[in-house]
Image (cartoon, rainbow, N blue to C red):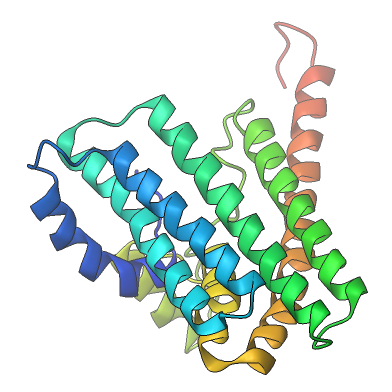
Length: 240
């Protein structure tokens, strides 16, 4: 089963990237890795612009970077050229570009006294904790056959307005709640387009998100570790 798409990706990126990918895939000079490199170049340029105060340009470049980041996977699937090395390059490029953009924007806001040093450093620490917790959760979850260890999506709640939204998300193949993609898009792409104060507010929003998201992933990892420890406690050949 295909994993649900993020809200921003499904509603904004896919309608534009899908037809472009179909046009690009038949061209021999277009490869997924080359698209990934373009994404990386855009990401580095975005980080440099954010670090030097060209916020609107940096935000626009970051949005283009994410578009290219989504496009490489679509081209790979259409060409049947997906590879482990390509996936590694994609993840590495994404991680470096996002971290560099946050660092550049945080540095600029601190230098211009729009944000204190403590929240800027706290954001980078929270981002690192989130990335580690997410990777560790997925690694641990694969052992007991729990998928990626994420939450169970689309469960009925009995809330009048929420259940129709969940059904719509299930039909669209979309996550029902915003997550890291939306946080990055807001803090590094959309808010910098609005100017300096909005960009500084984006740092605070991102800090709150990554602290909460890291805590949620650690809680899920703890639950997975409990399952693993319980399976070890059952003697070999015995009924659990």
